[in-house]
Length: 500
Ligand SMILES: Cc1cc2nc3c(=O)[nH]c(=O)nc-3n(C[C@H](O)[C@H](O)[C@H](O)COP(=O)(O)OP(=O)(O)OC[C@H]3O[C@@H](n4cnc5c(N)ncnc54)[C@H](O)[C@@H]3O)c2cc1C
Image (cartoon, rainbow, N blue to C red; front, top):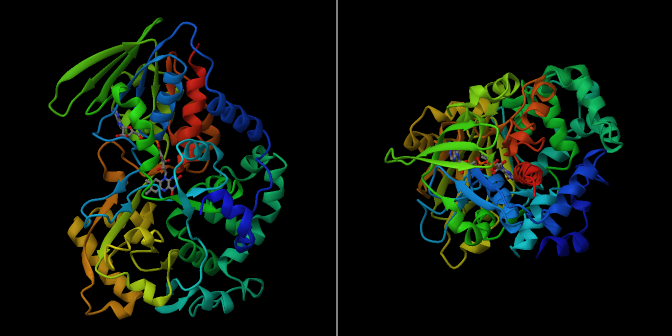
């Protein structure tokens, strides 16, 4: 079923516990409308076509390249690796033929209109990404239960809560806490929320809202936010209030179908194995030096550049000191979150025997968040095998894995999985696995940008300013950090800045 059919037939009732933003928010709605128009109608056709170098062939680079080429500009895309998509990366190896799993992006919220424009444009098939919690599991303080059981009786031994917190799940408590902010957000008052909470961590926000320490800890575990309690409250509030965790979908056949849809049209414009090492500009042009893995150096000169690579990578490029001091501070200061995924190939989709068809389990084990593939349909006809996202972690929880070898990660994660699913013990159903730790990955250096308290006010506007003829794109230049939407938004915004 395609997304719109689902929305019209099934309605949003099943997501009643989550927020439903009824409109695009405040001042942002006109900006979104401007960007959607540019996607639908194209950029103004080039009267005097420009030579534009786009650095990075992730979603931001691809979208910028696509729009500029269609408008008649001469586009060169430099990509350090040998594939397009960047953090949209479907792993088809080392799994048995036909099995796959997402190393990066896996779900797309209905609210992310810019991303959907391209999914629809390329006619990609989608299906719901299951977020409902039913037969999946919760394991906290050695207590194991299904989500249904927890929701019926939200009590975990060892967590004494205040009277007003008892009998409520952390999600219910959270929804009650942010209800007034939701109204503020929808009336277009993001600035007010930012002024009030922009310097606070998530923990401070919850403390000021009257939460007990036990309620905060439980929320951290159950909602997989533990490692983020010391990051910016407003980064989390923006995500939740703008509907990023509501009505989610996945691309059938793998998320990489989206970036690869741009490839056929841009193939001749992309140079792979081309890592930018230096960027300089003068009054009339930009010079970029790039290197291949064989250390061969080349140069390209253009009228404008759109730099769509993560800041941990840009940090090492020569010439960035000549941008403004404010740019330098932002490039070197913006916080990036570690993010890790450990994936196991299983001989049998054992979870289906427990009535689990998609969705996620949460635990206080090292693996933290476990997600079951609901694209198991794609795997049928290939026996009973499946690939399980055994561990999805962020920040500190992810860093606790990244110092282990991949073999040790797989072994350790399997041990945790046997605690979560004890029936696995002695069955030998795991056929190996792999992991992606984005903070340690060449060409990335982080999972995604995530503001520390105060960073949105300090850096956000600077990051979006060009430095002369150089524009900055990528998820980190948007408030939709850690979503494809942020990358797409930044690409359309910067492509619109290139003079026709
Ligand atoms: C674990 C994880 C899960 C995620 N889950 C979701 C999700 O479910 N839904 C969602 O919408 N989003 C998700 N995201 C976020 C989403 O993947 C990103 O926001 C988005 O893909 C970023 O695109 P980008 O173009 O900004 O950057 P990237 O994808 O990082 O692209 C940058 C490109 O630049 C290249 N590059 C780097 N340095 C250089 C250089 N010096 N010279 C030339 N090229 C260079 C890189 O190889 C890369 O191809 C997730 C991300 C991660 C890490």
